Image 1 (cartoon, rainbow, N blue to C red):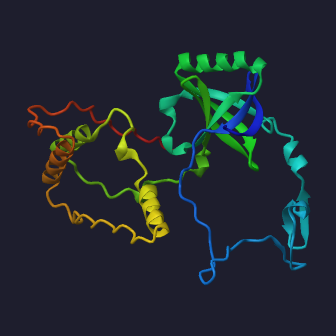
Image 2: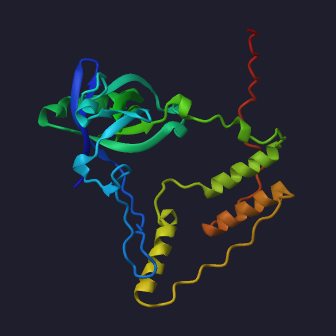
Image 3: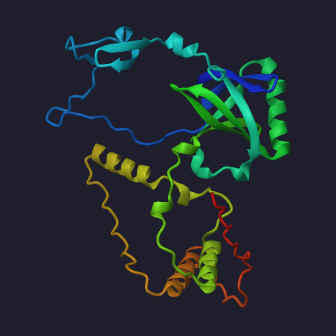
Length: 287
């Protein structure tokens, strides 16, 4: 059963929706521990006081802010819980925006919001239907894990989903990573679009979207458990090298993608795709 990791309320104007936050995803990665190679003793990390040089039990450990090397300001869990902040125990809806206006790079982990009690069922449903019909998402703020968070509230089926979002100043400028300007022909763009068509799918389901790394790791573990030689790694495909003829590379890629799907090779297009007119860069105003 899904365990609640946070309890509070959604603040929607004067409407309050008591909710519980639960994780929306599961991690199925294979976990490793650290062991002493000579005797397989488990390696563990202990919390040791650097002044007393002894391990400290959890009951004697607290949080603190280092004002100076000689002075620590202790902060209790109760003080963190009762911060003078509207979002300390509430998910505050700040505004509503279109889904298309959100840059996906700002969207992080997703969490389900569940109605916390029977009285919350109606306002919960109201918010779900309002978001669905408006085709908008809600931008929210709430305090969690030692800081105020920015989030995105949307509908998935009949449930509310909240995504953690990065603040604007947390997104790095990619301009230094962009290569120098080069010319790309219309024919090359058409070739790339044809390749995209050949590789496109309707949904992210199927064996090709399985976790092959975890499957390979489990095969190694099973083999060692049964004292069998682990499976050999497949020979890596030859590297593509430097692409000298971009059109030839695109055409060959399309043919391979179609063959992998059992499709007949697509006939050469007689007309170029329609592309939006190039936008003229806006003139910058002087200061």
